[in-house]
Amino acid sequence: MAYDVLAESVELIEHGVTSDPHRLSRRRRFAAMAVDVDGDVACTMFARRGVGTSWRETHLLQRRGGTWTLLGGGGGSGHEGELADRPSARLLGNHVVVRGGAAVSDAERRSPRGAGWVSSAELLTSREAQAILVGPRTLPVPRHGHLVVVWSSRQPPSIVAVDESGRRLVQLRLPAAR
Image (cartoon, rainbow, N blue to C red; front, side, top):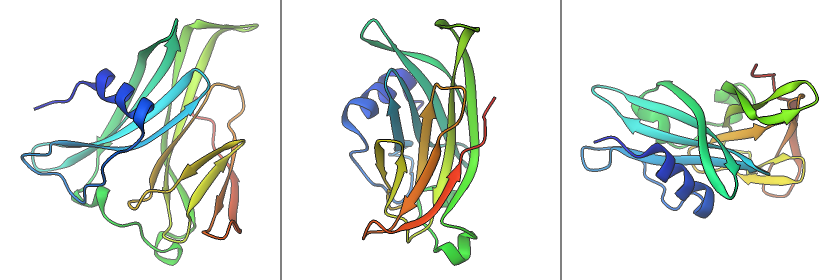
């Protein structure tokens, strides 16, 4: 049983992550993991149960005329632990690890140089990180620690991981995804 990527992504954009499953099963074949919206662009992340494995999938969207349009997406096989509790910074090796990213050309998004781009990065955060700051946006860190960040500017944004008291844990610039 596959899921409707566009419908589930729009639901996630409009309502955020509304459940927090610890694993997938034959009854629960997919789960929303993360979402980020930056103006008229968005990125969603889902875990999907496959045959003998699980998949982590991201989807890039743009709002056109008030309607969200799917620009593209991708994913890779993960492991059953995608929805497990996040590790400590000591075990992870840092407070934030960039695990992947994507970019799609958007011919509808005109810029002085022609077609625009929508880019994203996948993050895994440590147990100590409570939020990721991306410019004016604050992304709360879910129990499993997986997040996505989306942007449409030429330069990728800097992010700051903070703990529950707001203390800065680490700052880094995301790598260009294109």
